[in-house]
Amino acid sequence: MALPEDPEDLSPGTAAERTRLAWERTAIAFGAVGLAMLRGEPVAGALVLAVTPLIWALGRYVSSTAPPRERSRRLLLVTLAVTGVAVLALVAAFIGHGLTRFR
Amino acid sequence: MGARGRQRPGGGATSQHGHPDGEPGAPGPAAGPGTEEEPDVRFTLANERTFLAWNRTALALVVAGLGIVQLLPPFPGVPWGRHALGVPLIVLGAAVSVTAYREWRRNQTALRRSEPIPQSVLPRILVVTITGVAALSAVVLLVSAVR
Image (cartoon, rainbow over all chains, first blue to last red; front, side, top):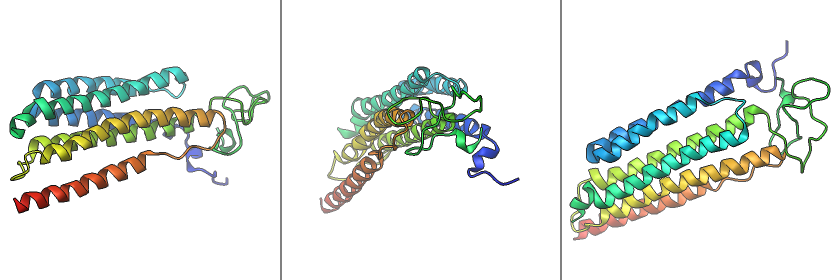
C-alpha cells in the first residue's frame, strides 16, 4: 500500500486529538498564570484560577462537528479570558503591589 | 477521508459534505472560488490550534510583564523603569489575543472561500514590540548605572 501524501491521512483522528491537547495546554497556561498571580495579587490570581476549569471544559467540549458559530463563540470566550487576565495584570501593576514599590 | 477530501488553502475547493456521488471529500457541485463551504475539518482544527498557540503566547507576555513589575527589584534612580518595561508586554498580550481571534476568523473565511490564507501580522507585532522593550531595557539599565 502506498503511503498517503500527508501522514495525517493514515490516522485522521490525530488532528482532533492534537487540538484537544492544545486546549489542555491552554487551560494549564491559565492555571499557571493564576498561580503566579496568586502570590502578589490573591484576588486577581483566584479569578484567573477560576477561569481555568472553564477553558478546560471548553476544550473537552471541542468537537470536530461543532457548528461554525458555536466554534467562533468558544474561541471568543478564550480571547475575552486572556484580555481579562491582561486587564487584571494592568490593574495589579498600577494599583496593586506594584504601585507601592513604584512610589 | 483521503487527501483529496481536504481543502488546500489557495488550492482547489473541495467540500466535506454534499457530494452527489456519496464519496466523502469529493468536490461538491457548488465548490469553487466565490462560494462558501465548510472546509475540511482538519484545516479548521489546525486554524484553531494556531489561535490557541497565539493565546498561550499572549498569556506568557502578560505574566512576563507582571513579573517585571512585581518581582524585579527597583532600578536605582529609575523608579518608572519596571513599569516602562512591564506594561507594554501586558498590553501586547491583550493585543495578541484580540488579533489572534480576528485572524482566526479571517483565515476561516478564506478557507471557506478556497482563497489563499492571508499573511499574519502577529509575528511582526511581536518582533517590533519585543525589540522595542529590549532597547528600552538597555536604556533603563544605562540610565540606572549612570545615576
